[in-house]
Length: 444
Ligand code: HEC
Image 1 (tube, rainbow, N blue to C red):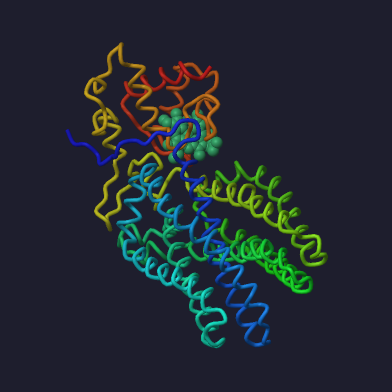
Image 2 (cartoon, protein in one colour; image 1 turned 90 degrees about the horizontal axis):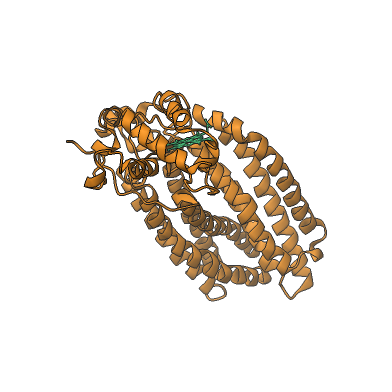
């Protein structure tokens, strides 16, 4: 019998593999966004220092640069490969799709990244050692390389949301995949956030400067930079959500009341913080500024990334690979065929190479075990299976349902593809029976 090209399932209890991915990703984003934001900020500061002949700004850049080296480049370089490991384990076919579409884009990004890493070392090391004009040029190229890495990566990440047009499915071309509807709003949204981060981190450095005058001046400036970045983030977020696929709109309606309630509170809190920096800079000290970085991470970045991940549902990439790794449609441009029909015929037990032989045939003795295995395969990429799990816990969604109700739900809603944010999961009746039986033993 023909198997489909599934990989072994990486199952992570309670928080789910998606959260594991999210945690690594969020830390990485904090580090990487700070570094691109700081590259733009450095270009601005170096320009000012050169034009207005202000050597003390070089001192600030040096301190900031040292901080970046540790914070962004060490943490960023550790979590970067970390994302590859977790993403490959959590969603091997998602990663495979990205590589098959974008391998040369990634290679190019790597070249920019190498320049960026060497650039930041050179930039910090050469302050005061080479003439200022050359240093200024170095700063500009560093900023260009940094923004270049962002632009290349964003095309790839935006493709995960959707290619934007149907052209990609027919041509399979990298540029049709790269320049989706969503790519530019996403890019500008991130640039806004990066500018904001460069200010938020900038305050950690400026608030500890020994010279009072300079401390207040720079804290005030960083407050303004953060405000500008925050405003741009908000502005482009509006544009961004207007370029999402239809299924995302259904989810957005589901999550929006919650988002609005929490986001408005956050916006007020951050605007207040930035306003204090601008108008009463002496109130900003290093402990406060450092705590605010952590606050951005936990209450700003994490929910934002979680939202983006959720809005992509039921797909993980390109709107042809479901989060549970099944290919949902033909992509003639890439020679890819939908697997939904085959699964409906032979089920996971027939189509997956990763089923132990003793579980291939359902018997009264192994039924619950098979049900557990199938539920992991079909649902656990998007739902924790443990009671009280953190990640869209399945048992809460079906709390109190008996096996018959669960089976009916699967047959009427999942097998027909009636719910836009869940994959179409059509399976032979015996597999639904086994899953429903196992879930019903867990959900009370
Ligand atoms: C691609 C991701 C994905 C997969 C795979 C998935 N779900 Fe869901 N499921 C969701 C999302 C998104 C929601 C919306 C609610 C939320 O976000 O909390 C949801 C909600 C539900 C609900 C609540 C009813 C509803 O319509 O909102 C049930 C019940 C459910 N899922 C069962 C299952 C079962 C059973 C499986 C496996 C056979 C499964 N899901 C697989 C993403 C998924």
